[in-house]
Image 1 (tube, rainbow, N blue to C red):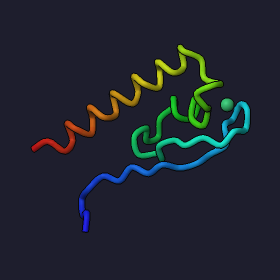
Image 2: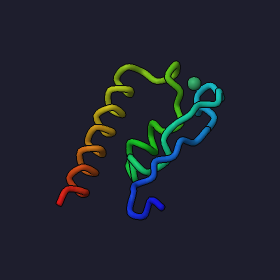
Image 3: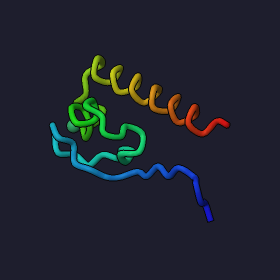
Image 4: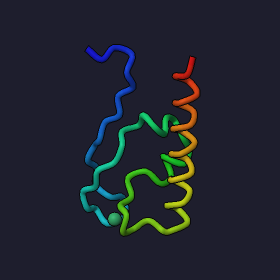
Length: 72
Ligand SMILES: [Zn+2]
């Protein structure tokens, strides 16, 4: 079993702007994040470079937090 392992799931959702099905990470990385509410569920064709940069930064921050939390 994988007890204690952090699970990150891929979910399929329709893009909020064009309706195309897209795959994205489940809530795990973003958590209850304002940015996720604002920019989640938007496909790569609809997202602007500025929005994409914000998401990348948020994800990098979340990964850094995970690494810190799992370090002993
Ligand atoms: Zn779209």
